[in-house]
Amino acid sequence: MSLAKPWRDLDRSTVGGAPARYALYELGDGDGNTVGFGTGVLRDELKEALAYRDAAQVRWELADSAAHAERLLAEHVEE
Image (cartoon, rainbow, N blue to C red; front, side, top):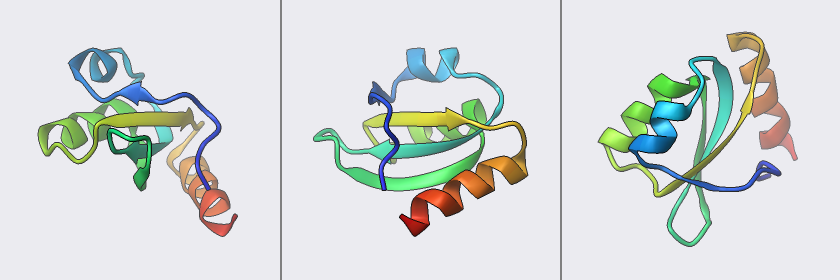
């Protein structure tokens, strides 16, 4: 299930403004369709996604730890 957050363009500005904290993130194409989910330190993950052009948009939910981010992912996959 998708995150209930607005999409942001996956560009240098978004990556630069992303917090260096653990998060669950959702990548989307230019039409707003989900292309994947991931967890990790958000800014690092978005740098990689931008470099590989994995998506056009992103949205995320911050987490308190890596384990918390994994729990958030499990909750969204189960729905």
